[in-house]
Image 1: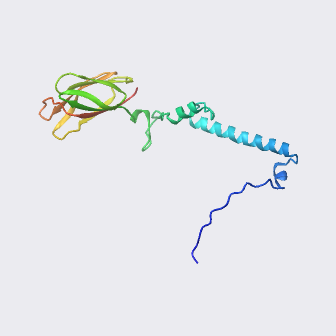
Image 2: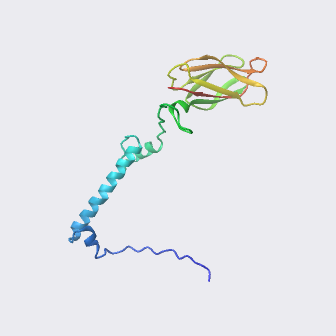
Image 3: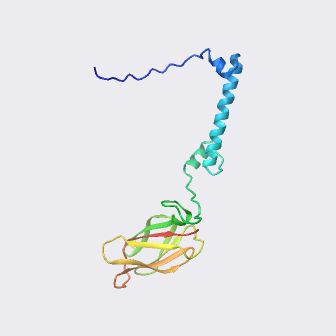
Length: 188
């Protein structure tokens, strides 16, 4: 005979006579009061746990705007203290800005980005990205690469807290208008 599974039928159970002993109260209204207080205590502890996880942010289960805001809250990594843990997420190793730049008839445009407000065209192959949120100093790291085939690279020309000026150059040093990407990492 093949094994068959019969799903359970859920039935709302009546209070069992031993519930009186479990709660320790014989009066039904008093028993309900005790159960409600226990449930409120559990809910209060759950709220405390969630608030702790949310780094002290107030969490109101009845406020849908708060729920939506917390659902979209970003991760706030901690600073490195000593040797970083393998695969750890720290403020220092998170990409703080990036941009995908495309060129149409020599005019650059930022087609996708994070923390970038715009790009300035400084001539053939020369560009300046403006950061939405400035870096803490001009010692952050920047990397980039042309996304088209060919022998080209990005060469930084000026690093400032609010902008990054650079050129896209062919291997022989000739400036070139090519689609490219840029990332930046550092303290903000």
